[in-house]
Image 1 (cartoon, rainbow, N blue to C red):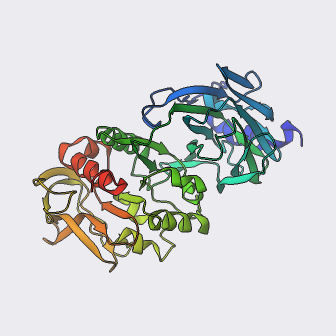
Image 2 (spheres, one colour):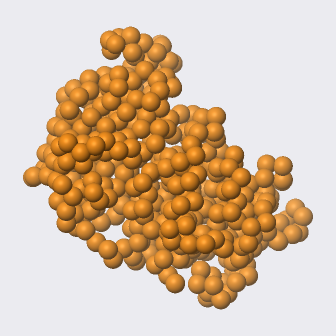
Image 3 (cartoon, rainbow, N blue to C red):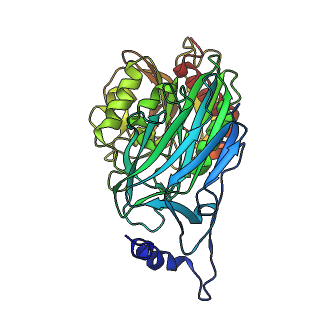
Length: 414
């Protein structure tokens, strides 16, 4: 299939981004070292801008090479994400020079920029001839921000056996749509360490009024103040369907997915359940209570979930959060604090929970839980309803609550 035919839709749809003179007005950023989404303590060892002009990058013994894929520039998109490598079936890369005494994380950006319905999976093959294994299940090649599709940045840790043989093949596989695409890749590296608890904030979709591209980094920066937590962000909820999830000691549901635009298959539901059952931690923040809304079993993990038939929340404003469980490690020694936020009144469910703090509604004068832990076999689940905007995570009271709650969920605090 020729490039002209494959990308005809791009020329049509993205023409909306051009002014009358043809001037490009859509700018896209490149990821830089030190970005809040990257796990601290790692260095960016390799970065490949996927285009015809750059197909191999090296740094010492490490190298990353594109084995197949043609370059293409999306019309109307300037910046790092305007160019892609594509192939009708799969775009394949070779990583070489990996060392067994290092921790590696492979990151990439992908984007169905012309809205052609691309669905892709990611496969790894250890060594030069090992079998291909799916490490990210089929998912829409996009995140959603303000109800519009946008690029998604995804992190995949190279857990054993994928970094043990020195060589790894990586494939971006077309599952639906005209072809497979990838915009950029990067490889993060650090000396192997077992002294940290790894926390992954999972985001990439939410109600239009929730700016997850601001709140997720704000939460990550707050958690990085806790010694012993290694924190990163991925903008792809389908990570819950990946075998690589075992790399993390706790994950944070920082999304509200909508099945009509970002469906998550049964492997994602089973993945999050199995991760907690294996002894790992789970945290939910703000509208994470509305995730997996079409899965009846989600309430067993979340404890309480969003019920759209209930009043959603008080008017946005200031209220006081009071502790109800002073003996729990999360709230021990904490004092009441004031926060400007949304006081959620929309939770429903009857799973066993232990309420840690609550706030009184100005509308009906009832007390509503603001944070609680769920009693589930295996792991630890911390659920907090605060967090409408980035300022919440920057305020001392809710910041401390999230720091303590997620440190507890990860097993850092007993």
